Length: 232
Image 1: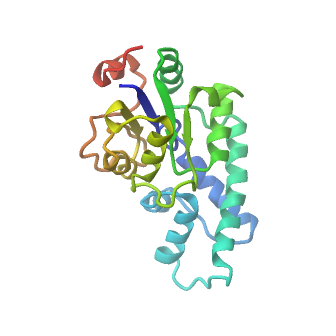
Image 2 (image 1 turned 90 degrees about the vertical axis):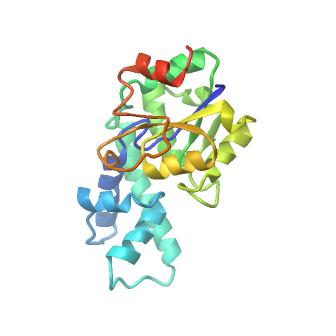
C-alpha cells in the first residue's frame, strides 16, 4: 500500500452541518426565504457538489420557483456567497478534524506513505479547513489535491479518483481510500480502490456494500492500522 486518498466533507471533519448553516446564511443574504433544516439537508445530500445540490433542491423540492434567465450564474453566485460564509466558519476554528485524522495524516506522512485528497468540495473549503487544522504549510502533506470542478462528473462517478491516481502515478491496487458516504464509496470502488468508511450523523443509515470496513470514527487509530494493514 503506497497511498491513502482522503475524502474531505464528513471524512476529515464533520462539515455537513456547517455547509447547511452556510447555505441558509447565503439564502438570507440575497433575500430568499429558503431554509434547509436537518431533515431537508439529509435528503439533499443524495447529490454531491454544492451547486448541484442547489439545482436539485429547485428541481425536486421547490415547485413553482421562477428561474432567472441567467440561472447558472444565479446558482454560481449563490454558491460563492455560501462559500464565503463557510470558509469564515472554518477559519474561526468552528469545525475541527474528526478523531484520529490529524494523527493519521502526520504518522502516515512521516512513514513515507503518499497522501492525497479526492473531494467534490471547493479548493477554498479544503484550504480553510486544513490551514487551521494542520498549519499554513498543510499542502506539503498531500501529493495531489483533487477537489471542486476539476473533473466533469462528480461522485458517485469515479473521475476524481482517476484524476488523483494519474497525478500520483499509482495504480488502484496501490491505494486505499477513506470515505464517509454511499456516494463516496461508489466513486472509489468504481475506480477499483479498496475503501474504508467512517460514518457520521448524516450517513450512518446509508448502505456501504463493498467497503473493506466501516468505523464510527478513527479514535482507535491502532485498530484502524491493524485492520487496514497500514504500517507507520
